[in-house]
Length: 178
Image (cartoon, rainbow, N blue to C red; front, side, top):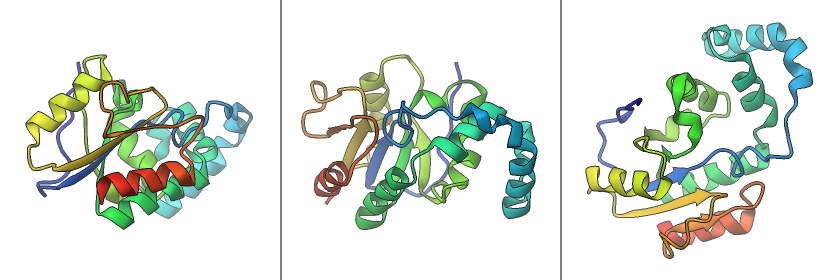
């Protein structure tokens, strides 16, 4: 089982627990037709970020680059900028090798600067979030944004999305974190 350290020694007070699929990656989008264009994309990303994305799964890079929804990403940024919250990844994207290069996928969308950490991996998202909060008592306000209905476990802290985060969802997050 992978364990992910926090990315910062900073003690944050607000956290956004971020799922990816169904929040910034709508399930309706899988554009594997771009796989033939990956060399061009890898060259472009290397020029822009000085990172060789060829080291990562070309499928994950293609999905993150082409399929993560730009409007949804902008809503996440709006929440973070409005509240000062940081991202704690609770998505299954943090598992396996993908978790090791997830910061570089987030970088493609200017989300890396908001990344604070990852929840532990134990196959039960509510427990993972609770374990993370227990280990980080300095977090006073938080919201879990997920297409999985976490509202039964966290009635005051869950925003359930449908396909992707909307402006109304983001407004609810801002209200919860303010």
